[in-house]
Every structure is written in structure tokens, then in C-alpha cells.
Image (cartoon, helix red, strand yellow):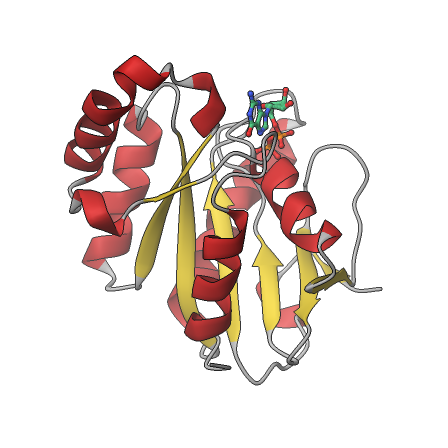
Length: 186
Ligand code: GDP
């Protein structure tokens, strides 16, 4: 079991990918869906809200990092202040980091905070992929328009967005194979 409050405490890893997103976007549900299918073993656990960096080991030995959700109000302000700094330090300095999956709520599209996060990641040239969550919450008649708007709002091509539903198991296999490829194991 490993958990780290500061990125500098993280153990070395041959290659690493990270998930980030605002609180409530569906990050825990998605990582659980990936982990349940036995491709990921949880190597750390913080109960309830993710307030620490959580690590999962990929079957091939890479590391999947669950970064704390941004924008969650119900935590002590001291903790909240440390989050941006910790996430920032991690994204700027983690050498092993191959890809960051930025989760955006598929039902509501990118929030202002999401857009700020994406702008910042572009400015520091961190490679990222948009993962749109809660696919099942978008009515099928609205899906095409929603996909177009979400990609536009995130400033990426529609084909580059991975749509998932942790609740219904949509897109989980595709995401898993993308993670494996990004970790350099395929
Ligand atoms: P986190 O704060 O980003 O870790 O988000 P959680 O995984 O805790 O999910 C936040 C809320 O969204 C919870 O009420 C989940 O049940 C719900 N949720 C997460 N994933 C899905 C999904 O794929 N479909 C639907 N309909 N709800 C989801």
C-alpha cells in the first residue's frame, strides 16, 4: 500500500500515467471500473474522497496515478490550498509521466475550471487526453451534438475524446488499451 501527500514521496516507476479531474466528475468510479477488471491493482487507498495521490499498478508494471480532484469545497482550506501546488509540482516535474487523462463530465461538458486546467496543461506542454465521463447520462438523441460541443469546449478533435460510462461499462476496454499503449506496453 502506498499513498503520497507530496509528489516527491512517490516511488520510482518505469512509466506512469495520471488521471485528473474536478471533484464529482466520476474519477473514482472510472478507476474502480478499470481496477475491477483486474488490469489494475490498487496499491493505495484513501477512503471516501481522494485527498492524496493514489497509486495503482498496471499488470505490466507501470503506474496509474489518481490525482486529487480539483475544486472540492468541503475540505479544510489548508488541504485545499496544498492541492494545486501538489498537482502542479507533480505535472511539472514527474519525469516518468507519459500521459494525463483529464476527465470532463460528459453530461455537462467542460466547466470553467476544466478549461483553465487544460489551458495550463497546454502551456506547460504536458501531454493529455480528454476522457468524457457519464456517457449514459446523455440521451442518445443528444449524443452527437454533445460530443461535438464537448470537444469544441476542450479545444480538441472529436475523435480524440474517449467517452466512457463507469456505470454501464461503456468505453472501459478502449480506455484500458489506450492506457496500456501510453504506458509503453503494447
Ligand atoms: P469523483 O469525485 O470524481 O471521484 O466522482 P465519483 O466517482 O465519486 O462520482 C461522482 C458521482 O457521479 C457519483 O454520484 C457517481 O455515482 C456518479 N457517477 C460516476 N460515474 C458515473 C457514470 O458513468 N454514470 C452515471 N450516471 N453516474 C456516474
